Length: 405
Image (cartoon, rainbow, N blue to C red; front, top):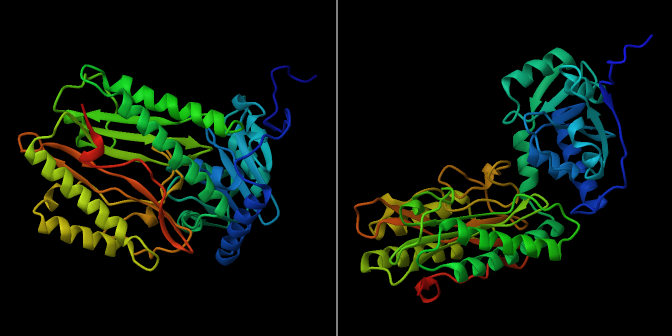
């Protein structure tokens, strides 16, 4: 007699119909063909993807881990997402490919699902920058691979060149980021809280995503709106601080459409800036414009940095530079994804090519107690296509537009 408490370790459930994904089946087929090319070059039988960005890139499904592992197993003839039972049929609906669900009635059912797809004793590719030590040990126990190779760098390189469909979605994101920026600018006045200004921008962007992309999942769009001392860090969370006359402000909008990230960042002032602040702001704008002029096919990330560093040194403010001057766009956000091979930093020698999308975002951070204290940052998105670089950010920058009141 079967124990009534026994449950399946894994199962499949095609609950409902497949959902509309952000890209066509042909787009996903092309991505998988490129991944299988990587597998052939590395002599791999299967790849286990575990990161949010790679699973979304190759399958269309963006998971919510909540402490549970997820995966996508790609072989030379199949692609299957692996999801937790708590998500029901949604992962299958949001994957262009197959899906297997694992239950939590027994420990390590995730690995039993992965093993059923990738098989034991095979030459396996993994994401070395995402696989934890405990997951690696479980992988060895259950899959007993003949070899394990890291495909993280190769998959990142594959994501650097965007398809025309990706670029079209990124352009949409830039348009919506501008709308959020306008809503934020309209909400700024003395006595309003940072959080209230941020919500105005976020709500505007989410409403526009819902209107113009009604079949997408609505998730992860956010705003960082910072004032005064809180502008010193580019990623500082929003607070309940009330704006005061004379404040330096930092506007940052981030619409997310089907896991694709875009951004708008601008410096503003509530009232006329003092002379020291105005000079720093104008200097950072000059660095921004110099950087935009340098973005073109054939130049390296490091060479762009060298030129901007030289300019800031001539202006006597290089010591206030905060971080690298830009980065790639695509499937990434503040908690998943990062195409580190296309960051505008001194240690990155990647050559810019048509199909890449990068930002220009110089930031000067002047500490408290120094004239002009605060964080100054501008951010535009540049698409490199066959006709040359195109700046797809439309929101204006500088004192003529962004001094409020």
